[in-house]
Image 1: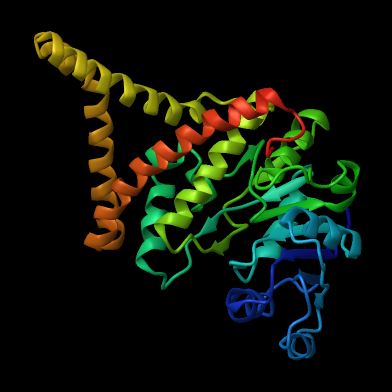
Image 2: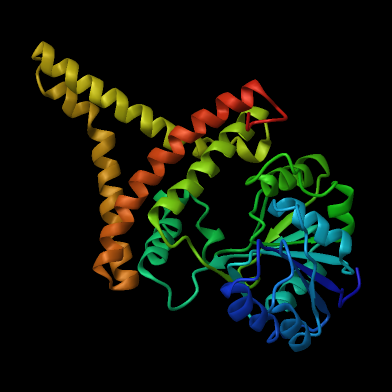
Length: 343
């Protein structure tokens, strides 16, 4: 690969929005690496388009019409791209000024097919975003994947979201692009094929950093993670190796444990059994509670916000419940169908 490859940045959107216009594109104007283009794919042209195209010579805006699913838009963007490397970033994210420069360094230094990095919380965000960020950064909340949300030790990975993911175009094309039968989760399928079918490598480095917004309301956040649980369960049933880690099962085990604990309490009360039985059964819940307290304290130390500190453990508890339930639903659907999990 050339030492200064041309990079095509692909951004799927429904329409040009505040994040793209006032955060994302201005950040690309400050990039220390100049050999790139940015392809934004809204449904239709917008009144802002002419102004933006005049302001940013590296910008291309390609309406997708009836194509609205992000993965399909990304595939369309890749087909229209001129780059040797394809860089995927979400519309509610924006890069650090050396994002592309650092990514090229990794490609040149390591013999890898793809490069990725953390999506850190932007500065000056609201309370809900900060709450969700504290959940993501905690071990109890991320299950060991906190490196996706803040800089951590460099490593190879076998699964990474497309919010900050760069891949050689010829590799992406050889893989056939994203599996558009799924959304979300198409990026997980792509990574599974890259690592386990093509025997390729994905390299995570903390310097390949972007800023990525979190959800701004609890309902949308829980809906998002319910979708993640559903798809992870389906992919677990499909046998995808990057979805077969035991950690993905923990929320479901936790939900089953809570149900069993409630039943044990009811039976113990009805039969007037000594409380020691329920007490013993409650030990894992006590340990979990200690973890929630640690999250509360860590969140307060990190943010000095009582709202964030109190909101983080409550949010984490509901995240585990929703994810655990939806994982089972996705697993059952994945067992029933390998090609269509939405009917």
